[in-house]
Length: 267
Image (cartoon, rainbow, N blue to C red; front, side):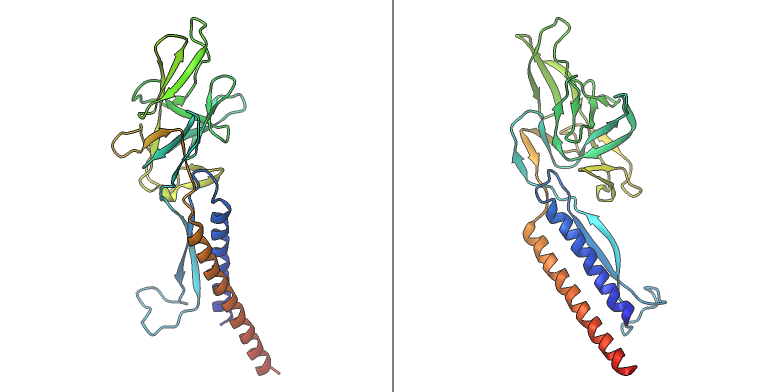
């Protein structure tokens, strides 16, 4: 009996923790909320042997499942602020101490990018942003926008078209193709490993990485001047928190009643 009550309190506390994290990140760019998942628990029995009249011995925490729901798109001035409408993630990389790319790829939906003093495109966490040096290339590389061309003319404009192509303008010359942003897709993106700071890594059950570009079949489209908001619905989350708190309160009252009963029986 005690174990059954304790399992109910544990699951409610876990759900409160998950919901609290969702609420705390309601304003975080491109945050993906999690949903707590539970199962019933039977002692010494398998799902095949449990009968309809069996009495369970509590609940079991399965895991926190990510939600792949698209967040709303909000306006944010600047050509380097981007959002992916649809499937896919930007590809980033944490640089080595010497500034060169490391061997580990990371992925994010947060498209709040900027250029450093060397013209290297970086994410909001200062990671390198990867793409192709041409259109529809095959080899990923860091995206670099030179602040002046070979003739010494300064950069006057930078545009990113719906295909993710970066076009730089130097003085009165025609725009020059710098490269094309890459998009990564996983068959089961909800099983990707969370690293924090809106970054993810390939997980054991996420499936094989598929690379592509904006607008390609099966890939979302890049939109500039926009950022993806969190997919957290505060009304839903607060309702879930109230329900979990009531579950915890009910379990604690049952525990108190059980303790009082045992105390009376053992006097």
